[in-house]
Image (cartoon, rainbow, N blue to C red; front, side):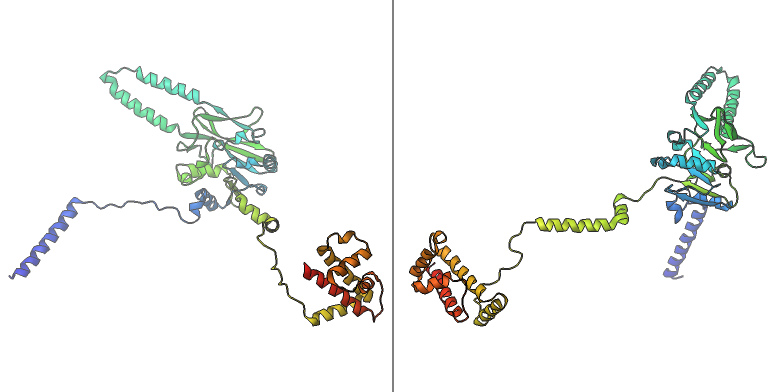
Length: 411
């Protein structure tokens, strides 16, 4: 046998021995690993309850708003008291029940702190002190029992019996039976131990579920409908809770499961956030208000210069001058043109000659003639005349414009 084959043989023996050791010293078992919720089950806390109701032929749906009531004859399960934020909801629910609706209330949802408390025929009584006294008395009785060896076995047996009785205390008796001849249900400690339900004086219960110290569920008629109160929290309807013990049977009886009926589960009052709601409801007003605000800010803003660039100071051409004068003469006549030229001379003299505006006409003519060297008599005729002939107009305009330009050149 060669050296290589010897190594291969040893390796095969080691592998075989390792496999044998693993098979002897290990144990292979199957373990169930729960899978996380997917799809609608991730966002819907009452998904399991809805599926159970749908399997029973009911139309189940959950709501996060209660803007309208369920159809008449339907079932309404209130898992929170957020609906009471709208004042008229209490009256709407009562009217719906009296028309034939079936209302389901949970003591853990604080319905008795809402507007339902005044007319729902059920109330909760606190028994926490009574239960504590009973437990203290039982503990004291066990402490006073003899400790002899003979009684040790009997004490252990009795303790086991007490444990069985404690376990049996979570069974509730139904009156009348839930379905057919089923008179008791295992509630898996889903109900409140410190409170028990009672019917208001003068009213009668149609269905009760009784444990030690009193009722954990009461149904009473209200008009043509009914009100069912459970001494538990919303957890009974959520998550995997409907699959435990006899909870499915209890929930089916609570909502009076009937093929073709409708059940609404109210979760809470979930509304759209304020900003998206304002945009969806009044985006036109928001846009117009924003535009008005921008316009107001722009109008009141500080400007660092004129709105438009200043036009350059350019000398008009002769053709523009002639066309402008011709258009003015065509619109207003030669007398208006003469008056305009007289005003232009007066404005130039006012800026250049001190006290010119307070002088009479003759002194004005003398001041202008002295300052410019223009003939006095011709200047007087041009400055004082209101009317002129077509032949006189060019000479007078020329004289007045010459005097004006001479005054401005002095400045």
